Length: 317
Image (tube, rainbow, N blue to C red; front, side, top):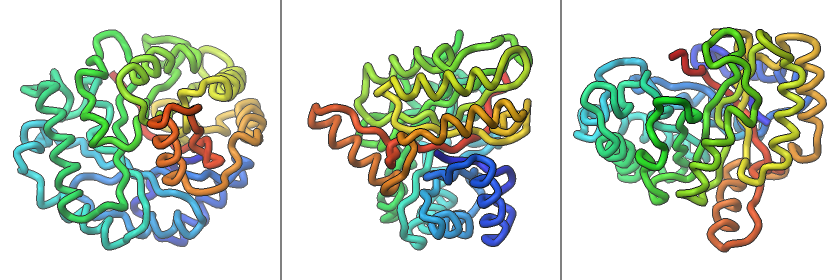
């Protein structure tokens, strides 16, 4: 299990502890992964990372920006290498394992680095992602595990295979997706409807572990209680999914696990399953999953650490 707590970058380690303790109490299960967001212009969020690891959890950082100048070509050309090196050096200095996702949701059309936005192409995007990986490698930030995380497939999105950076540059594949219900033209969609097509696409071109790196459901347009219950059942049956990350915030709609008493009951019931018991780090689970897949044996699940979980902001287009 895992959680995103809103506005975590601007609070102290003590505040982190209090907020995460509150989430644990609400959820009924301490998450094995805690996600936050870090802008390209920010320093490595060491206070967050230290607070999370002190709780024997794994930090998972979305390294992103909303600034339009961060195009794929500019990143690949080294325009922002100073910022990248500073962040990589901060991660190295901190020294403990951390999962980071870079240039996320590139198959959509709302990020400066996405193919189809401006002069970006799939080749330029791949070059940008690989360049970031090379900068971190050169900085000696070997404690950073790279996550590549597109949004779930939707009409008009870029084909995932066309923008995959390659197994050499990726430790973990994630898929983001949300049930928007009546808040969006996509309408009410089940967990399987949101994610299955993308899971099939990804598994066709890589054996890397797959997590659901952002998930959420609105209350509007259907039963969120039933949606969450069905989600846990679907994950338990789907060997492709090694981890779950829930976006626990009230933003475009109320995505939180406790948006209603019924939703919370469903969450606590699903999260109580032995499948989500944590015995070891999420980082170790990623490595174990990759080794088992490479060796051709049955797929491992990323939390025991078999299932992990944590959350982000969804697409609005």
